[in-house]
Image 1 (tube, rainbow, N blue to C red):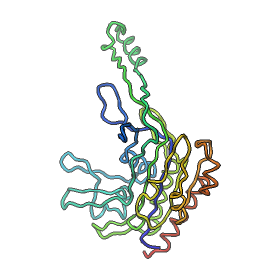
Image 2: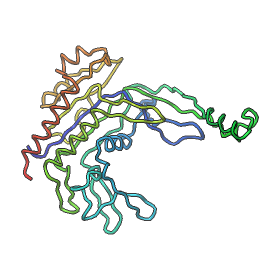
Image 3: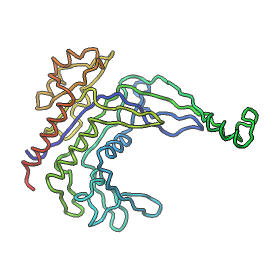
Image 4: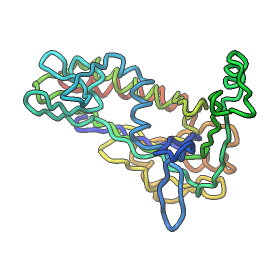
Length: 297
């Protein structure tokens, strides 16, 4: 049971993160395919959210090289004893050291072309309060009262992302020849799984339940985003193709959050033998424990 990876492809309803704004206008990040724009949440945003929610960033330590912030790394602070370093590091203090992440994410990309929904806001109540306390006529001198209208694009749509964890690299730091105990390595993987199962994010004041409504994957020999190219949605139906079913037969599983998120839920259950999301993650966590119990220390 050596040289394995845990790979998942997830469909979730989530918002997008924002790129560079222009003045008081916030624009979401997008990618362009076949002449159309698709809203995304970047893999950097996804990774940060998962690391924070999993608790792996709780012991994060930061140092500066010049004016550049970077994760603190040393003989005493390395991947084996610092969970925050599991996502990789590059240290330029002293001898340059690089340790790549033990897991990789894709961007979460919407299945549907972006339709601009602009939201308009202002700080009118704050400005009115300031104007009243300072004797300012807000209609004549709005700028003096600090009145500031702003707007931003908004998107919440079904998006697909994948994560692949190299189980044999978790907890290992070759730069310092250290390795975490098997129980600790299993804990870190299960913490990532828990964060994915219950993923919640806040952006521009909007709380976002980004839990999986469909997930497929598991532990196997493929150290890549194995299901990335076979999970597609069309007309609010999950497309069930022979290649998807063939890959599932290699020891992987699928799960569905029932709630009429797809028009073909019955077909998904029957064709893919999809169980519940809760059961999927419970069983996968048990398999993670079994995997690390089976390997040498």
